[in-house]
Amino acid sequence: MSWRYLVRRILLLLLVMWTAATINFFIPKLSPRDPIKERLQLAATQGGRNQTGLQAMADAYAHQYGLDQPLWKQYLHALLKVVQFDYGYSISQYPRTVNSVIGDALPWTICLGLVSILIAFVVGTVLGALLGWPRSPGWLRALVPVSMLTSAVPAFVLGFLLIYLFAFRLKAFPLAGAYSQTANPGWSLSFAGDVLDHAFLPAMALVLFQMGGQALQMRGLMVMTVGEDYITFADAKGLRPRRVFLRYAVRNALLPQVTGLVMSLGTFIFSTVLVETLFAYPGLGGLINSAIQVLDFNLLYGITMILVFAVCIATLAVDLIYPLLDPRIRYDRR
Image (cartoon, rainbow, N blue to C red; front, side):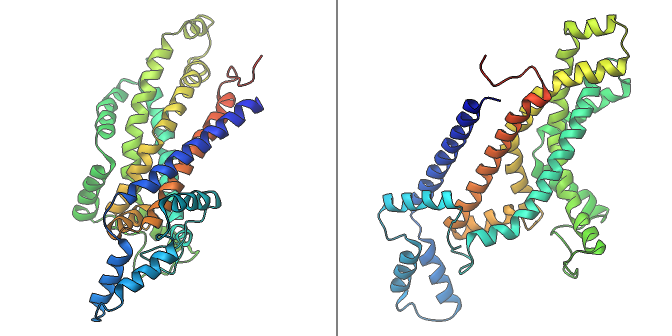
């Protein structure tokens, strides 16, 4: 691999991060609401105290968060914090930092999203390859309409259907949450089983949504690949159908399939956030929902930058493993 190409890709990643940080910084500034003053007014109302000195307290907190500085200073300070991966204190959960709040929710999102997308990609790719292979059993063609349906229906709508069917009607799985209220969190088989039981429905909603699109895309790639000359030549040589299927058809269709997976990461992350909110799952989805309601700009800023960074790193990683999937790809100049 050419070092020049790697440097260009890293610079492109930094450019994307800077663009996302800039947009993420200026959009909340368009809101006329003051989150700190609203939080103080709510605390004063709930505590039955008068609002004497409320403005002084709001000014003190604004100074602590740096909101009393000129906009350009706030912008440079925000960029510096992005480089340091330090997003300050959470407005809604003060004195906790944004990193600690995100750190509690991020493992749940990673486990749910990563496992779901891996299962959906593997199953969808295998299913799509079989659907596009002309020698596959005829009964597999009945799965094409099912794949079209699941790929067209949003993940949160599938979540509603799964909740109604398996939680309300059959009562086979829990309605929401990550574990039972009576469970004792810890490294034990009983707690792990309880977590898997609660994660089944949200994971199933994400898998069905992503798997349908992966299957249809792989099916289209296989249909185009089967008509290539090297497939005809492999058949003419008398190679076994299994080898032609795996080594010639699937392998050549796999690279565009991986590219499609990377392009769908943004949509999948957005779907994961919505599904987590629907199932009251303690991941980033619930944090985003609560942060929007109370205008916790720092928390929103941190979550957004982490999600953008994750997509950029995943895109870069897949781009770097392309030569392993297809040896014909070379990034060095000859």
